[in-house]
Length: 144
Image (cartoon, rainbow, N blue to C red; front, side, top):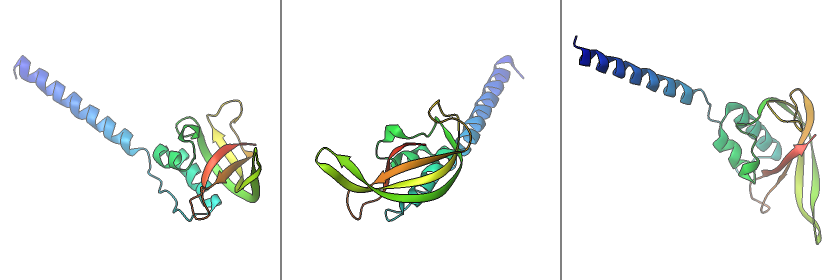
């Protein structure tokens, strides 16, 4: 084998190895189906937690009203159990606003910051929707 042929072989092998690494890495993240538009607030919260845990940021971001508020990629949710739901009203400058749902959970995060420390804790998510038949979306996910 000539020196040039050997170099080409090594380059080809390196390219194949790099492609395998990229393929394995891209397959390591699972895709989580988004819940249907008529899903309950509890189903939306569960789907969000599943998407965050799986690293499916597209689905996680689709389930929060402000996509920049998604925990995906920053924090992992390793366990979540819905423990209750309460109906509340958003407070606006003109008084009570639309009805919202607070979903209470036992949550086990990993990799959060000082406001969301690792380990099991009680937490809640606030969900609202843009109309009576619109899909529920998380607009606040920060109350422990």
